[in-house]
Length: 168
Image 1 (cartoon, rainbow, N blue to C red):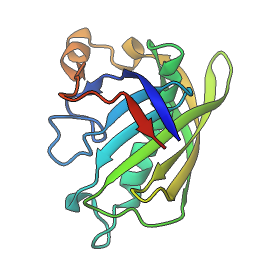
Image 2 (image 1 turned 90 degrees about the horizontal axis):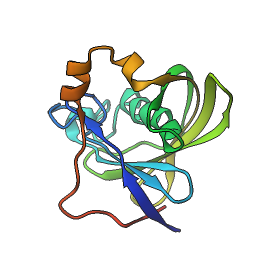
Image 3 (image 1 turned 180 degrees about the vertical axis):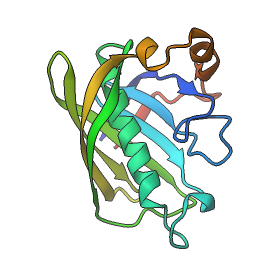
Image 4 (image 1 turned 135 degrees about the vertical axis):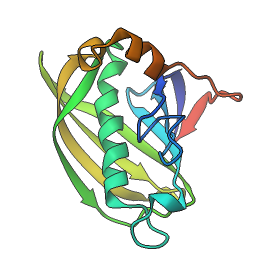
């Protein structure tokens, strides 16, 4: 099914998942969709591997953790999730040298905490990895206390060719 992109989220300079200056990172881009889900799109590389041709499970966990944790900002872009717990289920290998989609959504929330689920979707549409996590709600300026660092690290980037729709 195809969903309209409402907004592209900011990214970071050095983050392992979204950092554009992190040569070894995933360089994920995050898109808020009309169905209240967040989608990350990234290219897996050889240097993300564990076994040859397969992305390391820790990298899968990292992208799922960040995608679910960011999903809370769909309702309030000043609030992010800080991980309390994350349960991962590995169903299929995630290949290196391919483009994956990672979906995150909120399933439950209260004033201080939220729970979310997510999955990594392979290019052929199969679900490779699933996750459920619990997160503490926290304002971005409490996570990154140094305003100068926040300004340097938090980057608004627009694609040369903007995505209007994403197929899931």
